[in-house]
Amino acid sequence: MSAKRKRDGGCRRILAAVESTEAKLERNGTTTFVMSLVFPAICLLFVPFLLYRRPTMELLQTLRVSTGIGSNGVEPSRDRLLGGLLSPEFDESSCLSRFQSALYRKGSHHLPSQHLVEKLRRYEALHKKCGPGTALYNKSIEQLKSNQSTGTMECNYLVWIPHYGIGNRVMSIVSGFLYALLNDKVLLVHVPDDMDDLLCEPFPGTTWAVPKDFPVKDFHKFDRDAPMRYGALLRDKVISNDMRSATNAALPAYVYLHLPWYNSEWDRLFYCGEAQQMVRRIPWLFFRTDEYFAPLLFLVDEYSEELQRLFPEKTTVFHHLVRYLFHPSNTVWGHVMRYYHAYLARADEIVGIQVRIFPLVPIPFETMLNQIMNCALNERILPRPLEFEEKPQSAPPRNGLKVKAVLVTNLNGSYHDRLRDMYYEYPLEARDEVVAVYQPSHEQAQHTDERGHNVKALAEMVLLSFSDVLVTTAKSTFGYVAQGLGGLRPWILLRKPEDGEPACVRAASTEACLHEPPKYDCKTGKRGVDMSAAVPFLRRCEDVADGLKLFD
Ligand SMILES: *[C@@H]1O[C@H](CO)[C@@H](O)[C@H](O)[C@H]1NC(C)=O
Ligand SMILES: *[C@@H]1O[C@H](CO)[C@@H](O)[C@H](O)[C@H]1NC(C)=O
Ligand SMILES: *[C@@H]1O[C@H](CO)[C@@H](O)[C@H](O)[C@H]1NC(C)=O
Image (cartoon, rainbow, N blue to C red; front, side):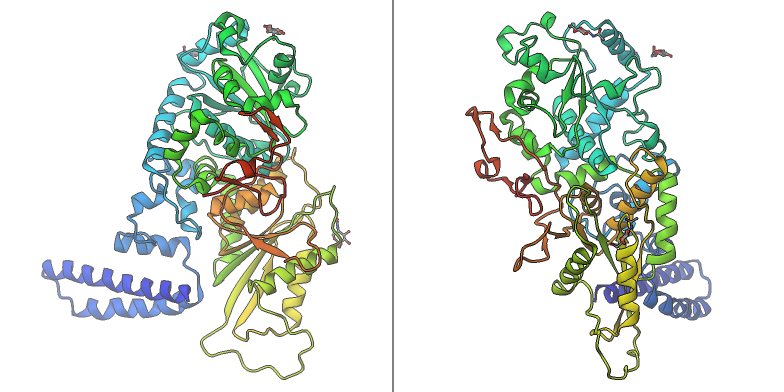
């Protein structure tokens, strides 16, 4: 249906462009008779092309150039900046994905608030002023080296340390960036070799990468046993969250915030309002986590008004910030574009199916395959193959077959093989549809510390974000990144559904889930509290019973 609308719109636009060209020619006094025959003829030549191809980049660009408007009726300059989310200061060629991604994504209907747009521009100015190599940065580095605090400086930093796979890394960077925005900190990321040339710089005219000559080298030592671990300092009463006793002289120049799942109650006090006020006064903060902790910042009274202005729709936090920060490098974008144009561009609909089997929760192959098919058939995502059909096949409908391209991502190629065979061997209930099944890679196992693996993983997340319909696996951060980038509400394959439970449920929003929230209520001091019951804007996640998710 929508493809048809697009096609008609496309031809109308070409004709409209023809008319305006003709008008110009007329003004020039040139004869228009030949032209008025030639242009509709060109348009007719386009028809088969338009009928069988999803609009490609080139075509969309042609249409935009000829009509001056983008595909959503938004003027192109605004559209490519995602409603002001992206800075216009960037040079396009250094990072093609930044301005081109929007042309391929279908799910994004959310505009950022004006306040968020302004906040991001102010953040970019701060980062440029304080980024590596600047005089203010050098001054702060001296302070870090001396290990003596003189209180906060003009520039104060939050340094990100990678933890686990690329999905988890995206979760923690997005959360850290939101914290930095709220506290006027500058976010620096330690880019390990396995992330080299994976992402573009998100802030114009500066860098977010920790430079090679940074005084701290052993980032892996920032872990459970780090001497400057905030939770341990608190436990040992070296520092206190009580502001009355904290003079600048008593504060360290830096602390390490240990926030992965294997932390302690002391570390988790960081999320409380009192701690936020104290920690902010430490000029250098290092942090490690595998979690999307943004929802917890909404529980801090001090931030609630500002967060409300930044995100009037709370369920768009992840969507806006992930699209703002993550732009695959030209290398990764090359993978994405080659694959898209080779296999997906001509399809009428793209169905992304992301399958992740966690080693600690093994699910037998046949069980998972059945669950995927149950979800796809019950929710009418894919047509039903008629396995025992003996009737002769009728001829394909005259107006052509609708092609559904299924993009499977999994470490093992077997799901792809079985789905492909099924749709090859059996006729389909929907006679006017065919299903093509593709899988870009099957790496067998996750190798987070290998760059080549991360390039493919990121490329697949981006390809999934181009889906019309997305199916993801419960508790997978890989799926969250795809849904966030694409602005998609995925169907989530539930973990081991019981008899009678559905195979999958539709996510309420594009938000990511915080898997293991603290069960401590900072305000009452009570333990074992379910925060999803405590405030209206937090609920349990569809895919993780104990998880927390922002909700409108
Ligand atoms: C900051 O220090 C580096 C050397 O560590 C130096 O190359 C650079 O010029 C300094 N920047 C400024 C603005 O002083
Ligand atoms: C920094 O100072 C603290 C005490 O304030 C000390 O425990 C820590 O070991 C020092 N770190 C370095 C790298 O010197
Ligand atoms: C992929 O899945 C199939 C089916 O369960 C299994 O036989 C095969 O060993 C798996 N391959 C790997 C590398 O895990």
